[in-house]
Image 1 (tube, one colour):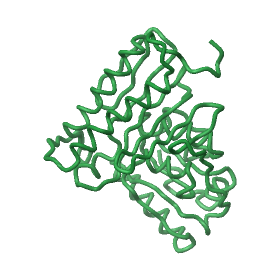
Image 2 (tube, helix red, strand yellow):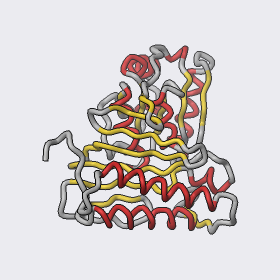
Image 3 (cartoon, one colour):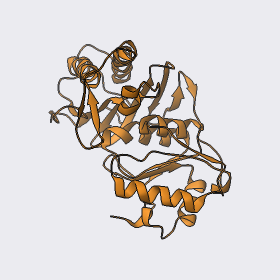
Length: 273
């Protein structure tokens, strides 16, 4: 199979079509349960999961494995599955669970497809706004079919910065210190509570730069290909190219990334292990 072609399922369906259907099915579950009572449990001191996360992931995995039973799976709420294929699904059924549990309508479903751990396609779905961010390697990034282009802002001083703090308190404190050092030489900042939508918004040019220090593969998978296809880049805290397993990332156009790295050089958030 040529590298630029998406795999076809056992039922003759392109992987992107299967991905979109699964994201919409999960989104329908999230939307339908949004205003209902939820069962919340803790995976860590601040990291929660709801019964809706689990129901949405079950639906996604059923749909994906039904079409591509040989693919590996890396999903947030399930044990990894190693299949007999170079392809791997990376799934976050509900990114922004804290927002969801609190009744804040800002969350998404992320499904990405990687080949040999290199992400080649993704779908990030916001079911509240019915916004589907998609990207396929070499074919561009899109929002509901309209082509996306990352922000062309080149200076941090003109930047609308977006970040999330995650669950690692020490690094979150360092991130706050870094923002204070940059402030007020910023246009403004946003802390939205969904890394998946944060990176999608950066790819779409809604925010100029997104950063986070503690992401899992399913958080960043969609953003890697969205950024690439929208003219942005994703680097780690040292400025090296990020990949599926990079926990700390910075996403923006290359010129803005360079200015951000220059202005934050030597700051503890950049250097902390």
